[in-house]
Image (tube, rainbow, N blue to C red; front, side):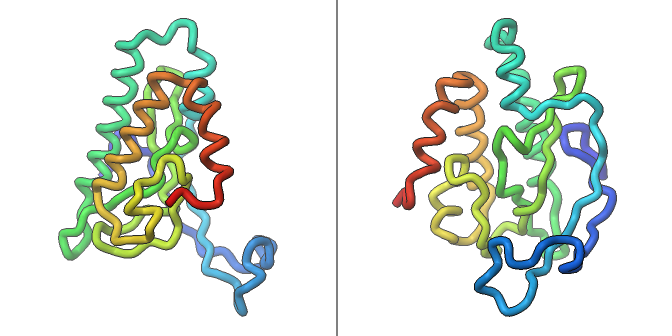
Length: 178
């Protein structure tokens, strides 16, 4: 079922090594990894959350920021409400400003499900370290609380904008966080 806060995904296409350059970051592998392309809804004139906040920094009130965050939370809740055949929830695993698009009406849509997985499974990819939970960074079993942690960091980002972004680069440059 479709949710207004989640981008519609129309298809998942398996890519062949002819579709991308094998070797870029995969030199230690004997064979090309399985890589998929996602065909999703096009959102005209959309901005990523970080660009949206930067472009509206002068006129985005605290109430506007809270409304924006609450709408992102509704999308994440809809993701968590999706169940697989074993009644496990789906976890996004990569909630960050780059993965939230804001449409022309100022409404958010969650994009990028490349790291999404079932609750209880193991996931190798961690996404952006700054927005990832300790659980995710330590490659433990995926759980809904990982997304909740990411939402907390996202709220901080929405509230303080550039002041947060200026400190993110120094965190991302560290070789290890723990």
